[in-house]
Image 1: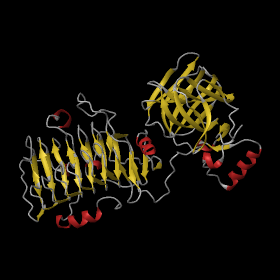
Image 2: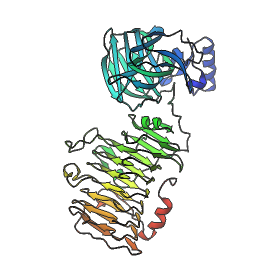
Image 3: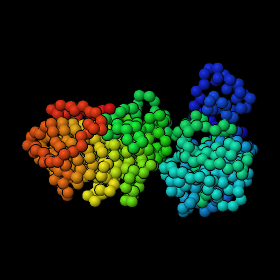
Image 4: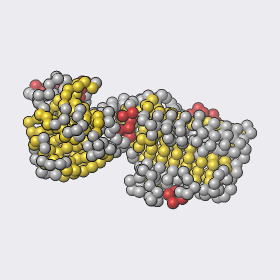
Length: 541
């Protein structure tokens, strides 16, 4: 039996002095103990970190297997034209098989890289695989083609490390990706067997193989995430929004993001994309500026994404909060993305939107960010999304700032929704869409600082209802209008400050009052410029 080196597997044993003594005594008897749920002890049945350069414990079938160095020694299957498997261990009944896996290439669709459990031969086993299209598959083979037992999703792009864990206890099978359970199934056709690794017409690198006899929780204590846990005080994932994001509605009580979930730190594109795509609550601390691939990257429900300090951000792409666009869906679906917080990040160089909220996503809080130099919108909210607060952001060096409602013809999805609060933002020389509103009501725009918005400040159209109050407008010729373009909207403008050749509001109609949804305190508009310029943007939480 091999034991992974402590520096490499990074086993975090929170033991008291007495427990440590016991563990050392037991280790002398050749039994490695891990902390298990409820205080139980888990025996390590097999482990291999490949640092000794020896793979004689592994029996192989198909593919091209070799030892490589990928940060440390690892086991690579480099072929994509065969069904490749490697098995190890004596064989056990109850087992949890875990390994770090880096997918490298897939030869077409329906391919996967996997860990194996209860492998009775190279053609009979359970497997947990990462697929070529962001899929996770839990399945079995009993002499023929793979049989799918359950599927899930995970963001696991080729070239990035992920931790796979397949548990087989009795007839219960559970699959974890990066310490989060994503699939489960019941099957008793294979009662025991060895552990294994596989590339089903796919190439991958494998490392830190660990087999234990006790299952783990969703946050596995035996092998922490590949992204380190952030020390307390370096990443502020706490905070509570005001405005619509704080309203209880659509089955969600306020906006809490990743509250109750673990905290991870990310500093690479692969880590970030994997983290925002995980299921379950998660607090994601971004260190430094991360360059992501061009395009939009999906954020799942129950996430807090927050920058560390004043130098964290995303460049090269943007974030989408929402299901894929579907015109046929005209009411909030049960699986709408919800409960997401984005704070203290700089966004630059997006190839589409910097932040896009769509398809009935709800309870979103976008706060204390710095957004500039994108391609389309900096913050666009559309297609029925609602219960959103946009606060304390600094937007600049960009024309198409913020859109609320994307088209005059989208009433079916938008009427009665698009309830958004904009407060304490610095709209810094952004010519238009500050915001441009269609259909939403009420849209509450208060205590923002507008300076030199050369086209229009707040544009309220397509029967939208906007309440614009307590803002400070400086050198804004058309600060508020419900006749800006297309069908007219309705707006109420009150208690605003207009200075340095700013115009006057062009408003008419009646609008629902925000106070019917939530309580708020309006700052003296004369103090807004100083407060917002001092407090908006990154590094100010």
